[in-house]
Image (cartoon, rainbow, N blue to C red; front, side, top):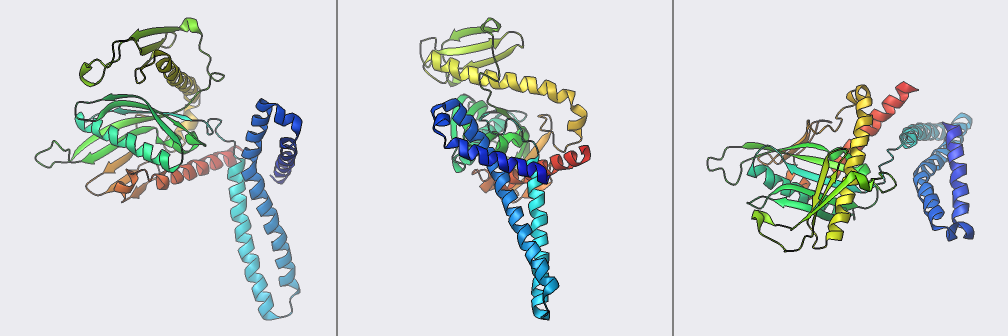
Length: 358
């Protein structure tokens, strides 16, 4: 591991020098690529330098403990040695996590899809609340949140919504949100006060760039139609709405949020590329099904990943056994306790599988 870290530090220094070179700065594509690589190595190098500093301090404290004649000084040195050993062990663990190959999609923006499931009107109301929750979380992260498409229900809920979230490492934070989210509460329309259980599905797709997914124009059928709002009321009389059909896979994306047909087509293509990439990745995941089954919470949409109980102000994530009695705060976008715990859990699982493979 130390040899690998030395190589990473040397490469980081090379990139630092290159980034200030005029010839690289004149080539924007090469500069952006180098800057991204430099940034990705920064955390590892910083942690490695911390480890080296601790190692030097530990060597000095060990020598002092061995050479000290004074009992009080010897005891102080012994305590410092134990403290530094614990800090080094923690730093080594953090370095191992940083050295695990990262998900290539972690840096990408996200296409977020929310759909009402079982529960009728109550499910559509919860879908609308969940969309707001993710919008608030994005705001706290200083990400850009844009609703691409929304299909409303008659009582102000959402049958389906698609949003684009842009920012720093969006997918790395939100990728574990995919799955079935269940709500338990007394619906507004329930006169007897009985608690109902409803569910929605959340899909978090990394946004695919054109270079990631190439779509042959011959494989695409594009239909245009008049946009319509809730209840079928005509929004405008121009054929601005767009329906994209990918013929080889049968995937269909409709977009009518914008008044411009061109803009609707651009948004539709972004969603279609993300879905096609997910389809391709799913094929690869299926080929590794046995490995995925060994990991807790595969993100399969058929499993209930989280339950929101309004009566008890409780949110439970079933994959990691985490329960928080702050549902009101979670619905305001305070998702960090779940996001951070899930990221840590999956990192630990990955570290465990890497150790077994080694």
